[in-house]
Image (cartoon, rainbow, N blue to C red; front, top):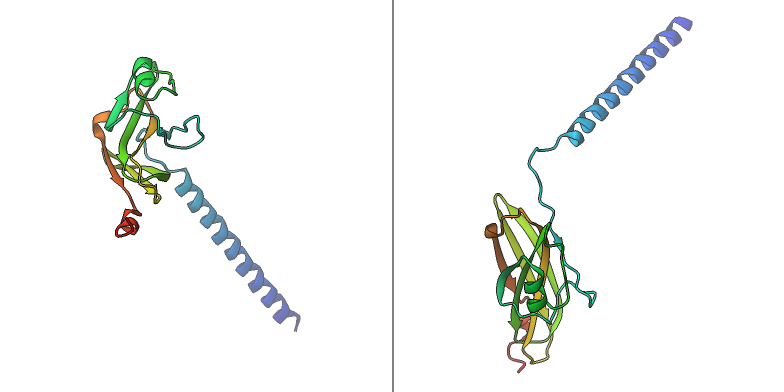
Amino acid sequence: MTKIILAELALFVSYAKMKVQFIFMLLLAVSALVSCDDDNETVEIESLIFPNGKNYSTQCGVDGLVVISNANQADTLLGEYIADFKREHLLVCGEIATYGIDYVETRMEILGEKYILNIDVHTNLCCVMEPWCVAYVVPKNFNVNSVEYIVSYPNIENHKGIE
């Protein structure tokens, strides 16, 4: 009887050792995957928050995509933000909405060598012409020619027929 108990105990111990080894190998594999990264430099791009606390401004004179590279341009077009133009540019995109603006959502996507700036302008029922602009702070070495922008007004369809 003791031989059977000892054999079962030995089997249990070897099974526990295999489990521990498996978990250890799994942890090694996960840590190897986590520590792998590509050597490509990533460009830090941050959305500008304007003094009104929002990610867009209605006090701007921008139509389309503009790169602001000095304080004089910033004062003229935005009038409310000064960047460290020795180290960075402002990438500003703006238009005029035909309805009042509730809020603006932006996201910058990287597709290979291209940057796609997606802008969703959410409007309300106010029939006013309201200018808007968004800005991103980009490093001085950022290739501004690689940026394309897409502006959409997601809820404009809801306004059709209401006028």
